Length: 472
Image (cartoon, rainbow, N blue to C red; front, top):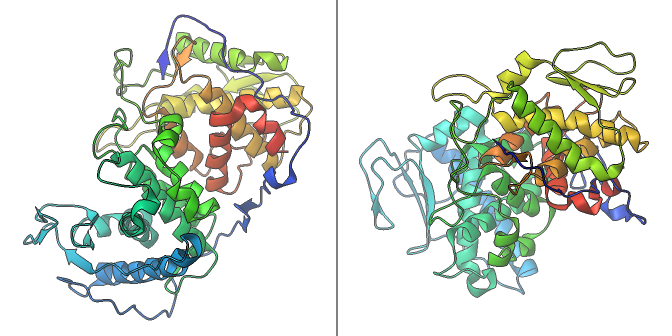
């Protein structure tokens, strides 16, 4: 984040109750897009026979078997969906599947030699999906589990879907890369909904930890902070990639085909660094969370974001304090009895100091500030008479925290959102003990998917009163 000097009027009304509620809008905190939150195993289904697909240049090893089973299921999904979703269209299987080892002898694919190419890709020139079994797939499998491999291949099949749909996908040679990539992430979300509904022959996924791993995979393969979405080859930051995946998981393929340039211009959050985004020694776009001036800027931005609610702003102190009517949480804690937020500066700094390459560390300044903002959001809810405990409170808190974040997009306020900040929010929301989507006692909404969704609702629509209208 970037601390600025002037304080301007910001979006307000984040917790205003809008008369009239639609029951279909109100999510069940025990579900994910209508599905029960499950915590079972994710990965290959025990006893499922391997698919019989022809693969060129394969070695018959574990990674190739995983890729073949994934692509067999993804193609089965699209064979079912094409006629139903796209006016009777027929899905033709991809013509070529090619495995290669990026560390071995290269093969010529899509006018490219695969030597050193740590990647998976779809090539429309000869309708091919190819993958690196030597480094990429093992790295994904070791880091996030086998469903990370399935995620990447489902995304590549999404590009094949675009090609096979032709004009129905709205994609042509002149289409910006980011639109193609957002659609492909969305199509991957379509497929994983099908898996979560237990319709896949080879794979299973839990809607709790399993989907969390998928979103962590998207975080891992995001564009680096400061990469413009207008750059040729841009795939999206983590926030935008997760958003597209969630659109696909919650809605059908037609929603994905509707992603176009107008939507991208309105919704996409991936921006370049500007001249105000200086490196304070913590990496570009990060400021020190233990600097008193920066904490003052945060408090000012929170007061501005919620000033029209009429809630009495809570006092913020930099030391832990006991509370008679709520559990102590870290790195920030809200006490309803005293309307006070207490900070654990050691833990706050640990979260707010990003990891250096090859070293352990935290996430970044926005993740730490959002933890504080979530406790501030509890004070707003208390003033409005809402319960401060339970999963609905956690969702409402995430939404209101997102609403505050939305007020920091443009300069002129006490804080300004920097490239990479929303990715930090995704990383923190996926943490098991994240306060961003937790109630006053630190009880976290059980689904990381639901946490990110609530935060996103607030970020884009917080000024419409969605947080208290939807999460009640």
